[in-house]
Length: 138
Image 1 (cartoon, rainbow, N blue to C red):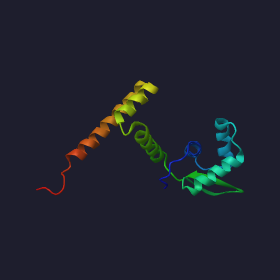
Image 2: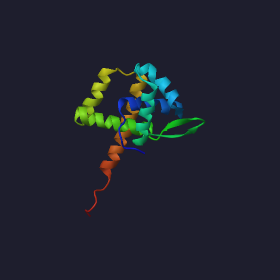
Image 3: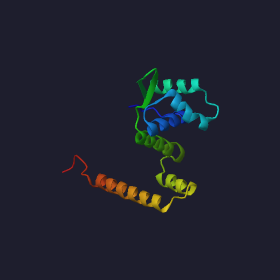
Image 4: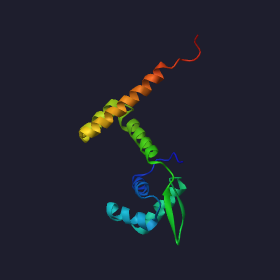
């Protein structure tokens, strides 16, 4: 697995692979082209070759073509990107990060319930970390 953060275009290609599973360059190109307008087939091929060198994707033979597949997990990539954004933009200020996100896109009731469940779980994890004995004292 790679610790490399994908570029915006690489992330779009990864989203195609996460959604579809293994796909040829042509299949990936067909999905990316409408989003990117000027994307050439050779650019898509070069993109996937670069992504393979970075450890983001791999390939296997699929007849006369190669089928590319994601070598990185969606949740891991998103966690890394979100953490980097939190540090870069908000200097690690979680509350401001969440507040700005909620202002930018007001959530539905269902999304708020999901957020509440995530916060409750994070709170439990934080409390269990805080309750662990600190080593070295008797």
